[in-house]
Amino acid sequence: MNEQPREAAAPPGAPAGKDRERRLVRITLAGAAVNALLAAGKLAAGVLGRSAALVADAAHSLSDLATDAAVVAFVRVSSRPPDEDHDFGHGKFETFATFLVALALLGVAFGLLRSGAGRLLLAWRDSAAVPPPAPVALVAAAVSVVAKEILYRVTRREGERLRAPAVVANAWHHRSDALSSVGALIGVAGALWLGPGAVVLDPLAALAVSALVAGSAWRLAAPAVGELLEKSLPAEAESEILRLVAADPAVRDPHNLRTRRIGAGIAVEVHVRVDPEMTVRASHAIAHGVEDRLRARFGEWTHVIVHVEPEKKEGAPERGFC
Image (cartoon, rainbow, N blue to C red; front, side):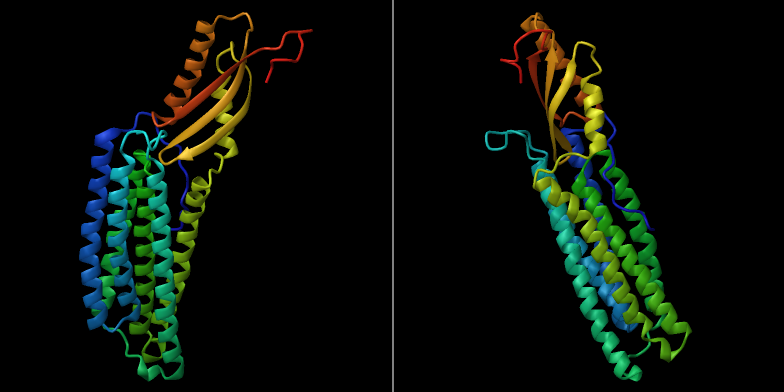
């Protein structure tokens, strides 16, 4: 389970509108139901089984419920069409939801760190003060690992297919819960099988998991913040855009490319040169062709502005050319 979050190129033709919204809400609510069951089960097993790592893991699952609710709310808003207040649509509401999920993960990491450090300090002072976990904690941790890993894979696949960054981020929240459960599983198993002197493994596992969760939070927050601050698309994506723009032989010298991401879609502005003797109707058709090619590749959420300029002829004055 060592994959990294990535910004995948979404396949053209993904469901849109109400169908997309329904599918995203459905997969998120299914995850919320699983989270509620797991949180209750792990909390009970952690208390009865005397496992700090499992109790902390249950708190992590409870935090997933909050992010599930936020994702559902923001997905509904982001599905709205452009209006007089949002000319480019509401896609960045999904980006903001992604950022909120990352903040929630940071909170979980801090909670795990504080809980694990306190229990580790107690075990360091007096190992007898930390009771060994019971076998029920081991079973609960194993069930959680399997359930959350399945939930992560299903949610991530659907989020990437529907081009929903907030849902992909929520999938990584599920993955961080699976990692948390792995840590609890290792800690509980070590404390059970290696005897009373190994109870320190349980809080150590909580500390290790806190670092993993913090790493996941950072990897989610960085691209979300970049998008909110109008960061350009990666160089590879911009190179592909320029290739698509220049695919028509009538298009000369595409330049002044500006790009940014808007939730599930992108915005592109580009200048192109055409034959100066070309009619307005013909140059308009060329610009439309650029728009169509970009939308066919990057989806209907793509906003395209094509600025048409006359190509400079040999010996012509520079004035009037951008």
